[in-house]
Image 1: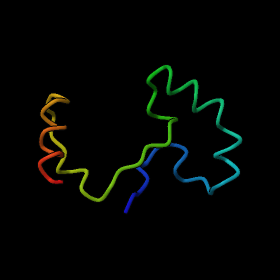
Image 2: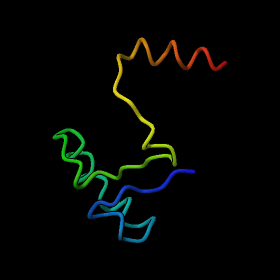
Image 3: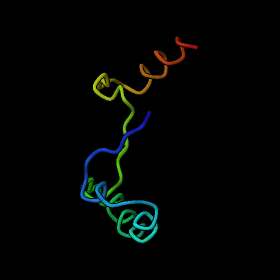
Image 4: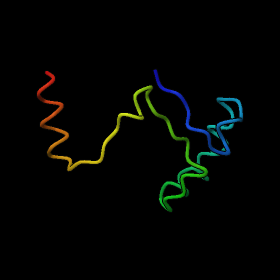
Length: 64
């Protein structure tokens, strides 16, 4: 189940703000500004680990 990560926009009801703020969020994405972008995570986000993409793909392929 995905949940929003708390940002300035996550306290505002949807869907109107989603559409009204699309240009701002697009610009924030380009600028790498995560304070404005809607960010979502699954319930296991604390289990995330930093690793090379190739290792991630190998690990995920092993689960198939």
